[in-house]
Length: 138
Image (tube, rainbow, N blue to C red; front, side, top):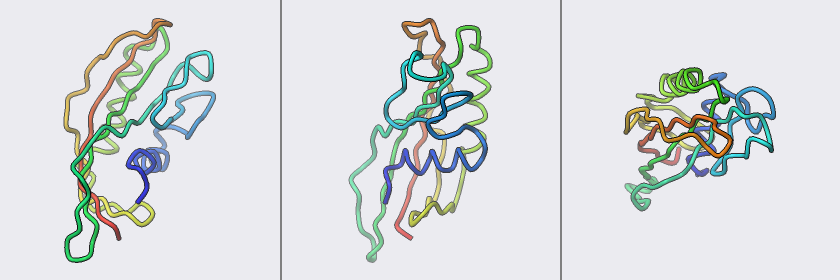
């Protein structure tokens, strides 16, 4: 199985939420947010943050996960960054029986509220939301 962040990125790209590693518009990044000088100021970053150890049930690998998604907006883009996070929630929350590559996601759900984290050193707003779920090998 891929890291969860890779699969969530693929789902969001397929839904038109952003483009992987884009240098303009909404770029989607994995486990490391680019600095505002490295790329566009707007960024969606997906972090693998936890879950229980994988288990095997009747020969099928079963894994639960927790991922955090961060959305960074432009300096004046506080509301538009929040709206982008709402779009991400709409794309992922309660997604059931979804296959990405060789992985079946039984369910993906929002496990926290959308919350404002901070403004970074460049005064760009950052929103976060956590997602959890259960996945198995196909």
